[in-house]
Length: 329
Image 1 (tube, rainbow, N blue to C red):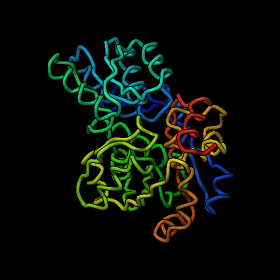
Image 2: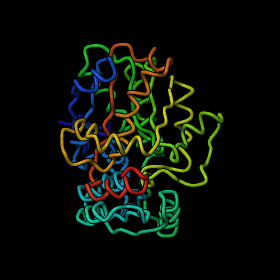
Image 3: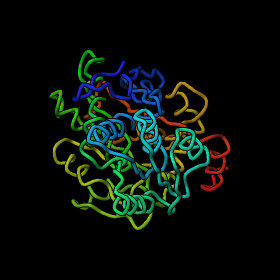
Image 4: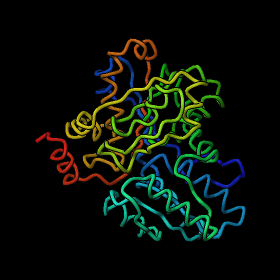
């Protein structure tokens, strides 16, 4: 059962299971726990923050939502809109799969396709918000989104006997990172290192850390086009100044091989790879890289919490297409 939100209204997310992966514990040489966000109502952690933002906007008299998304945030916003009895338009890039579009429509969302990557879809969503007066539900860059995601850390504290040595998560736009840092501050765990995983070509956070300022990638060249943002949220970079954040970047091929070998499917406890499969693959693959990194090894001596983002759209045919694109056949 979900905890009550600040305003007393029951949130849309549930308390997700935290399970130890014996296979990943053996691979990493330390206890690895997985926070299984794939069991959320919309299949990913996004419902925590996006749902919280939608509920707050509805209380203030919102009449319609507009959201830009490659998939998971849009699904969360559409689900929340349906629960709240409000209309919503979700703007997606052309790289969004037909399964995700169909799911959005089944939830009652009006879907508009604009651009090839999320940043281009977001520009269109902002235009609609300004011209039509709709309330914009940003997929990752909003304080209420971070506040909703912070609930993850409270659940970790309630479930674990001792605090973990590190938390590993994937970074797209930086909303989950910002939420986890907010949660760490709330429970007094801000000394816990965070290992942030990205794929090359969608590594806007890694680039920002290296430059010491926000960096806009010229394009999303990773195959994970729907998951990346050319520019990470400014708050994500601030988080790296407040907590120890260790950036790890993997190749697309490594991520896809991790999916194919079943490491992600094993994490999710299912044979169907989920819509955030590449992000989950980053998380699984990066464990082996972590043990080769001296700084990361010092951070993970006994217990690592792995955030499994979840969701629902990469099928066998799509995985085969990714393999062909990357020359892995």
